[in-house]
Length: 199
Length: 250
Image 1 (cartoon, one colour):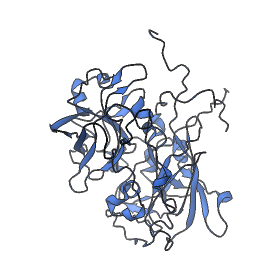
Image 2 (cartoon, helix red, strand yellow):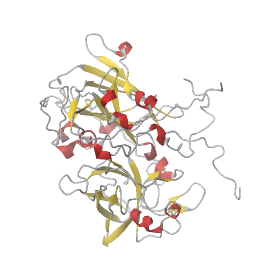
Image 3 (cartoon, one colour):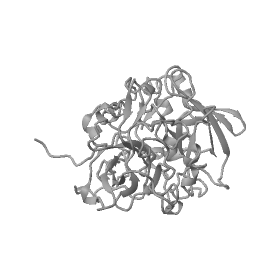
Image 4 (cartoon, one colour):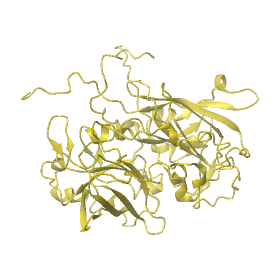
C-alpha cells in the first residue's frame, strides 16, 4: 500500500448530441422565449478598439459533408492581447462567443475584433489567435483548435512551430478574402484534417 | 475530503493535462455518427497558456428567476410541466478538489415522454406545452448548484436497429478557464438502458462511466414534492506555482 492521492478524476465527456442548441442557443431552434438574455451572442460590444473582422467557414466531416449541426465557442483577447479580466483589458471585449453552423448551408460566421499577440509564461509571445471549441452529435469530446491569420507574423509562434508537417500549419490559418474578411474551414477527418489540440 | 494543500498554492500554473483514458473514444463504431466526425490524426499536445487558462465570466444580472426551474421556466410560472418532479443538484469542483464558484452550468433534456423541443426531433411522444427543456444557473461560493426539473423519458434513436437512450440530462460546464470546458450527460441510478446505450459505451473505463450516474438522494428530496438526484462534476485543475517559473538557463 502507498499513501492515498487526494486528486480527483475529471468527469468524462459525452457528446453534445443533436439537440445541443436547445441548451446553449435556444433561439436557434425557436425557443428564445425561455431566457431574457441569451449568452454569447457576440464577443464584442460597440466601441471595441481595433479592427473588426468577420470569419466565415464550414465544418466538414470525413466524407467532405459540411455539418449542419455543429456548435462552436470562441475565446480570445482584445486587440492589445489582454484577456477580459486582466488589467487594462478593453471593457468592450467579452472575448467569448457562441455560434452555430447554419441549419441549411452549414456555414458559420464569427464577427469579432482581431486579437493581439499574447504574452507567454516563459517570455515571448504567441501570434494572434482565437481559440475554438467545437461540439456536435458524433463528437464525443469537444475539439480544441485555433484560428491564426495569414496577414500576421506567425513565424515565432510556439504552437505552430510544434507542428511537424509544415503543410498542416495551413489548417490553422484563416485566409484573407477581402478587407476585414477571412475564410477558415475546419476538417474533422481525412485529407486536410485540421490540427486539433490537447492543451 | 479536506484540501490538505489549500493555501500552499495559488493554482495559477498550467492546466493539468487531460487524461484521455477516462474520456470516451472519439472514434467508436458503435456510435455511428462518430465514425466520420472523429479526427484520424493525433492531437497536438502542449502546455496551456493564457488562451486556455483564462475564460469567460458571467454576472448574475443576466439570469432570470425561473432560469434554473425547468418545471416553470418555459411559461414563466404560468403552469407546471408534466412529469416526475426532481431536483438535480451537486457541486462543481476541480481535480484538486477545490470548489469552482460562480461558474455557469447549463442543462438541456427531453420531456417526460422522451421528446425534445427541437425541430429535428420527430418522435411520436408529444411535446408538453409547459416544458421547454433547458435551464441554467451559476454555482454559489462553494461550487454548489441546483435545478428543479422533471425526469426525462427514455427514447429511441436512429443508430443500430433498435437503440434507445437511457434517461439523461445534458450538462455543460465552464469552470474558470476555457481549457476546462466540458459537456457531459447525467444518467439516473438503476436505469437498465445505460448498459445498452452505445453513447454511454463510448466511455470505456467503467468507473468513469459510473461517475456520470447520479444516485437517488433521499436526504435532499422534499416530502410530498420532489425526489433529488446528486450529480457532482469534476473539471480539470491547475498545477501549483512554486516551481513553474524556470530559472534562466535551467
